[in-house]
Length: 335
Image (cartoon, rainbow, N blue to C red; front, side, top):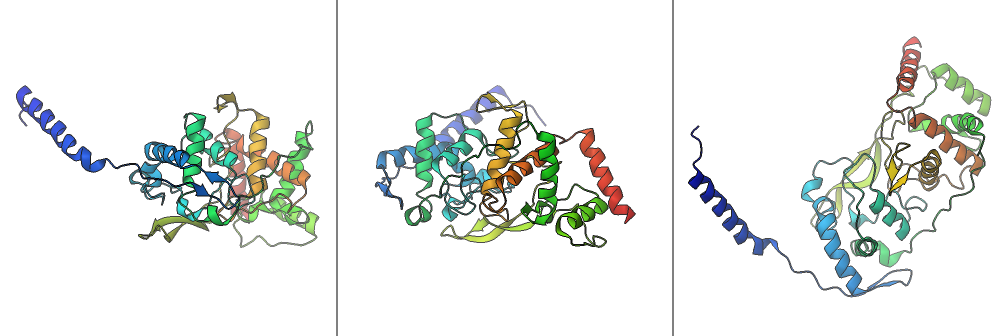
């Protein structure tokens, strides 16, 4: 292949600039005109705020979430999890009971922090822009005109402070056993006890004998979700995503970061990590099979569950995690 001459390269650059200049007018769109938006809770969003939110959304969000807010942006194709379709009015981490509309604070928290392990980055933009884009998102779904946001779930006092080992032991039961004030998380997520220990623990708590001979408690199965993958011309979902409950020894959690990193410019401590675990367990995950546990089990058990899951995620990608996984595999092979 002959090298390109300087004059040829210069001509190509000129043609490229001319082509881009010719396309630019077609690509530019005028900012739409907005009217004030009346929400179901009586709040009125000024038109100027919506116009500013539109500009912020177009600059930062539309490439993944789509110009129409339907999750069909050009950069979002093939992403897992898929970009949120705002037409549905479904939010995973809303700071409220799963399925309710989120609080503004929860939405802003997601924008400031991002979602760990996903292409949803933390956006370092001025607070006024964060507020404006949060308000603009409400133009996509009629739910905001029909329903008020859910009540924010408060972070209760940690009853296990100074007794972490006891909390982990209690949480181990809360996680693996269903009923009697326990959550039974292992029915969707994987179990972290060998079969014999799991059967013995279940019997000791519930009085029921369980036969795990034909069960595989160490492999999570995909679950149905309400999150759209594809949409029709109106932005209505035509295909829904499957979700895999995370394995806490393997997967990154969306709203929980490794300890000793920095989140929102602050050191991310063990306490902060535990509180974030509590928040998502208390609220559940909107649009998924993860229910709200606050009020469903005692608070001391909910906090104990946070301690237990934390004891697993701190083992992520360590020799201890691999040793535990090997024990579980050996347990499966022996029975």
